[in-house]
Every structure is written in C-alpha cells, then in structure tokens.
Image 1 (tube, one colour):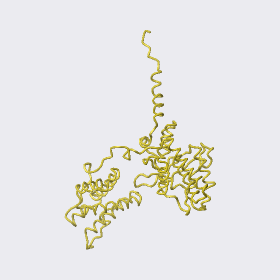
Image 2 (tube, one colour):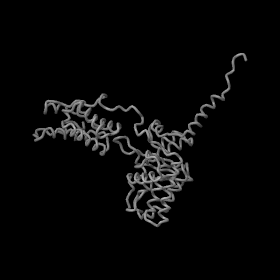
Image 3 (cartoon, helix red, strand yellow):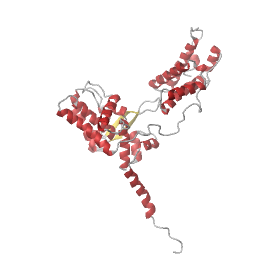
Image 4 (spheres, rainbow, N blue to C red):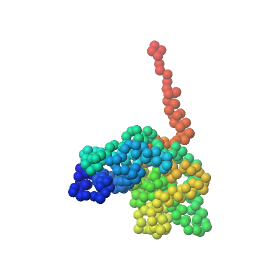
Length: 366
C-alpha cells in the first residue's frame, strides 16, 4: 500500500537521529497515501505543516503523543490564539487523520516504532477532546446581507467615484470604473470574492434561454469553493439582472481595452497589467463601506448573501438559487437567506389564505 512503513524506511541504515528519521519517514508515507487518494498537493502540504507544528508544541514524537496533548493544544488555540471553533475543528480533523494513519496496522508504523523505540503510536483524537460539528452555520451571527437601500447607496457611491475622478482629471478613473463594475458583478451573479477575482473574459458566454443578454447570458465560474482536498468546483450562473449585464458589456467593450492589457485573460485587470487580487477587492470594499458609514458587519460576501435574499424575496425558485450559488445542500442556501419582514408577511398571508377561505365541510343529512 502507498505509504506503508516498509516502502519509506531503508533497512540496514543507522541514523544519527533515529527519532527524526522515523518521523520524516512517517510524513513521507502519509503524503504518499494522500496522493494515492487523489488529494491536492496544497492540501497535503498544509496538513504536513500542521503535524509539524503539533510536534513542536508537544516536543515529543508521534509514538509518544497522548490524548492529553490534544487537550493542551486545543486550549492554547482557544485561549492564546483565539481561533474560531470551526478552524480548530479543522486542525483537529487533520491531526486525527495523521493519527489514524500511523496507528493503522495495514501501514506497519506501530510495529516499526515498537522495534526501534519500545513503544508505538496510539489514537489521540476522540469524541471527548475534539470539537463536534453541531450547527449548520458557525460564522459570525452578526453577518447579514445588504438591505436594498444600503445596496443602492453602495453601488451609487462606487459610480460616483468614477465621475469624481473624471471631473478632477486625476489618475484612477479606469480603476474606479473597474471596481464599480466588479461590485455589481459580485452582487448580480452571487459570487464569492475569490471567484470574482479569477474570472476571465472567456468565462462569459451566451445562454439560449436568454438571447437578449447576448454574449453575457451565462457566467461560467471555474474556481468555485472546493470540497477539502479536491479541485475547485465549477458551476454556471445564468444572468438574471439586465442592468448588470449592461454594466459588464460597457466595461468589456469600452473601458477594459484602455488598460492596455489585450493579451491578459483576466476580466479585472490592474494598471500594471496584472490580475486584481482578492485582498485588493476587500480593501476597496472597506474604503467605500466606511466612507458611507455602513455597518462593519457588511463584507464583500454580504453581496452574495444579498443576491440570494433578494431573489428569494422576488419569488425565484429555491432550487434555481441553490444551483446558481453552488450549494450542494439546500440547508446551505437557507443559511444565506435573510428575507425581509414584508416578504415574510406576504408569505404568511399566502399560507393562511387557503386555510381560511376553504369551505366548511358538509355534514351528513344536511
């Protein structure tokens, strides 16, 4: 099996530091085992770094680790580093995977450690010292979408920055126009920040079901949020907002060519002929939000929340929204939905009307 001890250990070789040699062989074997499972190299490298950090924290080798070490480590992550429960659980999951690997008899590490050091690794992560996933949503409870009034103010302010730059004849008008269009795309196609950053010109295409949008009828998202260890998930997002299509078309045809980066594939390019990065998107968003005095709980991801919420309020089918935002489960889409009071009252009235308008049942003999 890929990752077996006999494939990673060289027989007949005497190491100056046998403990370090055994640990490095374990990591090589674990990397080989994960590669055989088809996991991404970035995921494997991140997990290896985590195991090394745990080794430094405990100052002990895997065959010396105990469940108590995990308890102390978790306390330090919580009280000293102040990490979120979801982050700590992810770390614990990776550590559990390594622990299960080195204790699995099929890979032979326990036998080799017993021969070399007179002890062997044991399972160190269990239900009593790891964080359980009890809630569907573990993010900031204050996170919310834009109201429609807030969204209009934000987009209007972004447009105003273009006019202001042109009026005073200063540099930055092209970048301001790009940013204003980008925020409209984040909202109008329900995108994550990284998904938007990695868009290329060719990702827009025609949709036979919406010929009125021309070449901007469908958006192919190639870098959707991945399942851990897997490649990015792709999805197609149909265009549903004509005003946003007009904005993108104007940017692509009249503004982007003026950046003088005809050979660059990116939709959002910089003055230095590079691709706009997620951190730059976040920085411009924060500048606009704070200038307007909007709540700090609003983030670029709030634009994606807003798309889900506003389409729900407009009566768009829930399954359509789920597929467009790339959620595998409807419960994930439900987390994003923060419908307004007016919508809830309208929905309640629709639910109650049939019950109160139904005729009373007729009794026999009458």
